[in-house]
Structure formats: structure tokens, C-alpha cells
Length: 216
Image (cartoon, rainbow, N blue to C red; front, side, top):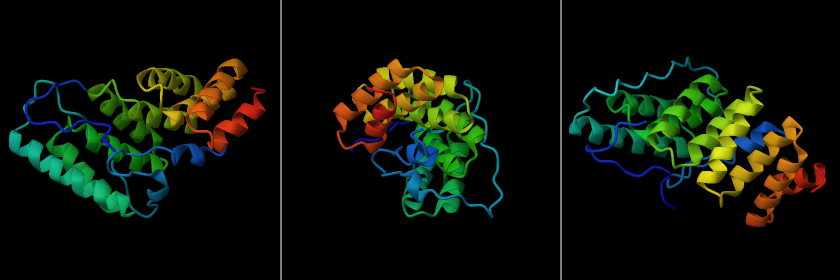
């Protein structure tokens, strides 16, 4: 499966329920690395640090830093896939410190923060990753799920509208969109979203049960 973020060399742009909620969170995957929030369990005993802010647009990142950051990102992805989320977080921090424009590292770190229920940190990293790759649905879906966890349902619905336009064949996006609009009381939009999700993934129990709830 292709990664949600293209591999970048040195020359690149400078842009950057279903109840329960846990069921929605575990649906997000980091393509190409099999990231799954089911494997990113909270590290309750480890003190967590805030994400490092992205460097100003005019800051130069050396080719060596880009390469080293990619190495740390790959290591972090492997650690996270094995459930070693504390060590993975350290590696993602190193990667972002070396290259603040590394969208894969930002997205992977966001998933870990989200798995640790540190949704403000997750939202910051999902936002940065989305800014670097605005055509990708995965960061928008991730941010929407953190917004839902914080009760910011309107913000989540807006992200899911955008994500569904970016990737209309993503069943997870349509299921999450149905959940958001169901919580907003918009049964028509919820039913339409659940219907699309079921059409794309007929065995999606979250979408099927949601569709039954809203009378679709």
C-alpha cells in the first residue's frame, strides 16, 4: 500500500462516534507502515513533551538533516508497529527536530499523541501534516477524530467534508462523517455518509448500525 505522504528529497515545497470513540480512532492507519491506533496504547507513566514547533519558512534544512530525519522516521514507524510507542515517540521527535517539514513524522507522532489521549498535541501535528500535504485525507481524518474526542463536533464535520472530497473512496472517512453529522443531529447528511461507507465497505458494522439509527 502506498504511503499517505510521498517521500521527499531535499528540494521540496515549504508548505506545510461510531460510539465508542475508540472504535473510530483504531480505524486510522499510516499507509505503507500499517500504523494502527489499536497498537498505540497510552504510555501513562512516561512524561510527555509538547510537539516542537515547525521551523519558520525561511529556515534552511540541510540535505543531511533530511536524510537523517527519514532514518529516524522509518525507525519510529517500525517501533510503533511493534507497540513500542514511547521509543517511537522519541524517534519521531528526533525526526521532526531535524526536519520540521517531514510530514510522515508529524503524522506518525500525531497518531501516538492521539492514542495517548493528548488530543491538543495530536491536532497540532495533524494540522502541520495536512498543511504539507493538503491533498491527503489521512491527516484530516485523524484531526477530526481528535476533535470528536474533545467534543468539537462542528470542527470535525468540516474536516470530514474536506477529507471526503479529497478521497471519496475512503470508507473510514464516510463512516466518521456519518458519526459527526449524527452527533450534530443532521440525519440526512449522516444517512448519506453511512450509505456511502456501506457501499464502499459492506461489512462496516459501524456504518451499518449508524445507518439503522438514523433511519437510512
